[in-house]
Image (cartoon, rainbow, N blue to C red; front, side, top):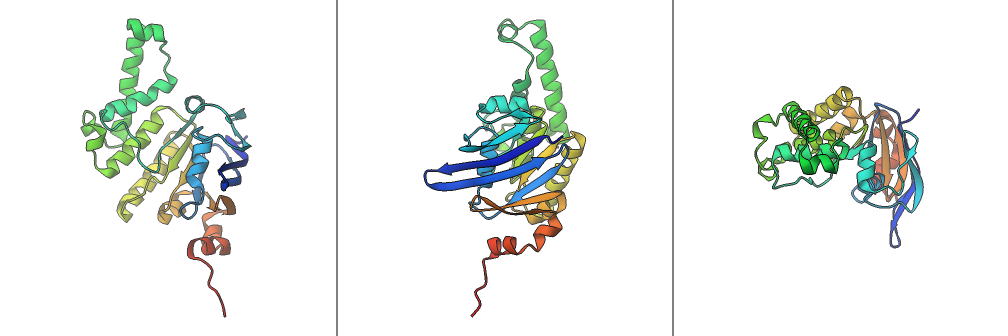
Length: 256
């Protein structure tokens, strides 16, 4: 049974059709990339899947449960987490607190426990701290846990954002251009990290990325969007030489 099923997803901004009839099915453990030129509708798809935007039409189910119309926090609690094209950290909070806060989407402590700081609450807080520190250790950030997120260099902020996304224990992880702005060596490291967390945490991953070395090296399938519509879907080998994809990225050569 598929984990994620998206059928006929569409959304417009006024008269502009940002996403039109988008479809994808992801099996558990799959890593699928969505690519396309700037403005193709890729991030809009992520915003629809995570409740930032409400779809005009379409069905989105996670493990058979309908997500359309749910608020963003309910979608996170259902098992969907994401990163953003433009890094969105709690910049003045510490690195540790950025990860700790993500655990609370699945906290087992009630308001009563929190207000009266019961033994249950203290055990929960200890569990969250241990889990957060373990994630930061894994992502190479253990040496800066008390630093503010804004003080980290760009590449480490990217890693922190992914660690925070994992703290909510998702089954589906949406990564929006995690290698953006990185040099080839950094992009290779990011690709290896994505594959590592997919395998270790048994995740299903939907990836938006412009760095084609990451896409071709990590994705099992690729979906190509252009002006909100899917123009191609297939393996990296299929997509590499697909005429419609080449035209979308490079334009059509007019012949006399």
